[in-house]
Length: 101
Image 1 (cartoon, helix red, strand yellow):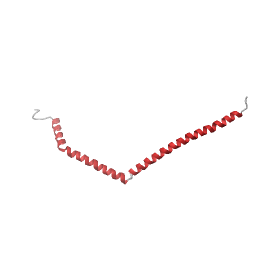
Image 2 (spheres, one colour):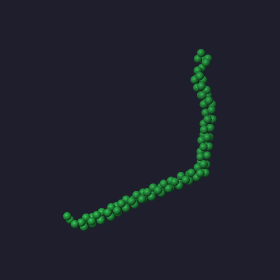
Image 3 (spheres, one colour):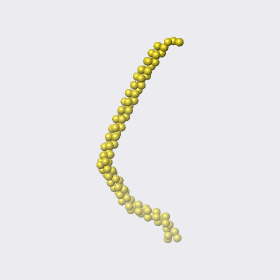
Image 4 (cartoon, one colour):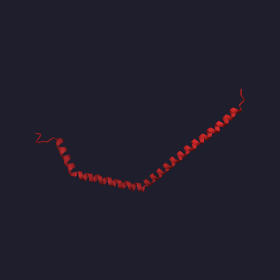
């Protein structure tokens, strides 16, 4: 009975292999064409909406902000040192002027 009526699984497997073997190149070409069309449409849309230009401008802004933040940190550190010296001097002067008890 097995030889006269192959199982459904065997039939499906055989048909799937035949489909893949006969149409594999066509399937690969189809998906490759879809991918190329997608890339072209994507490039056109990014050009149209100026997304590439916006990204480059944002990267420049990010670099500038990082530079300014580092410069501000350096200025704050030097200013903190100046303030510390300014605060310590009057305290020492006040202590020296206090009468001894």
